[in-house]
Length: 371
Image (cartoon, rainbow, N blue to C red; front, side, top):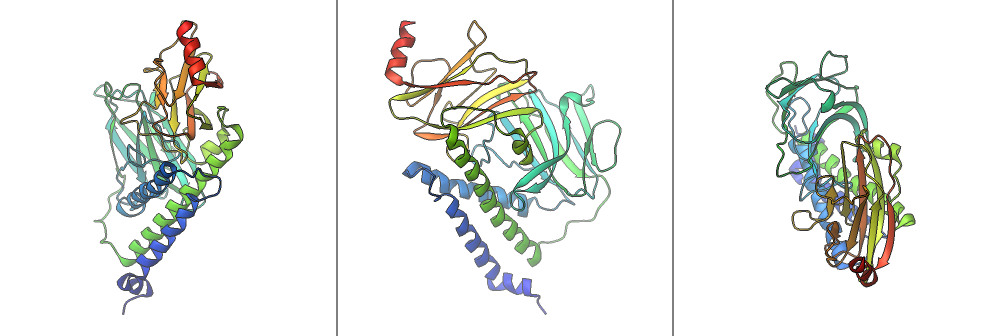
């Protein structure tokens, strides 16, 4: 005799419930404080479809922690929480009760880190770190190969600490110049022998659909709350609450700055970094309202230590405007009148706060040309 769960799947009730849950997520795009333009709303609803794709990868296709594999939780066409355009993100679903082996080639990417996490945007809205390993602290062979143990018990050599509740491993690879650097190649497996994966069951499908719908709504809600909070310092760029950033999966080596920007057609936002601190990496990016990086495949929407031009006095002046001012550090709005933005200092020895100013585009351009 079929179980109640099996009957829900057979009848289509499980699917109908999933669709109803997804519909609720649309309320985050229609919140009263969100921008009411065709572009912002279109991107908002596209954002939900992107979260859906990520959620299905996370909770259905790569959900079994007994047989983990890496997938990308943010990339060119699926983005979460001010995704870094200079990053290659990988995620694997794990279970803290198991031990795992991660193996790979280091490559030449500028920054590489491995972080075990617990929680999730679909449950408590947090992704807290349980263990972390910086590639700069790893033992790597002469052949560029490495191996990492993930476990609750302390291990010699390369080790990432797990807790019983650990459920994900996040790998961050950060490029100075994506076209010139070689990313690390990594794989993950259980440390102990295990059986062949079981076939998909009605219970697994129903659980995956429920988790996915909750992930879409929870993620959209979390970062809509963030965007709303940024309105109090529009066109400024203060340091974010670092504890909050870490609670949702931030890298412990990074100091984050987040804010909201808004510009009329005749305005420009000037962002000045008085100096670049001694650091391993930095970048500044422009996002849409939903904290998705603007489409860096086709628009120049971010700068880093490789691409930015530094002045003789060590400062960096960045210009965000709707039209090209002919400035070497111009960032494009890509048709947007507002959005969010993010600055990162990675491994910095000090925190250098940016200075911002909204100017009339024509007046600033005239002054810049006469300088």
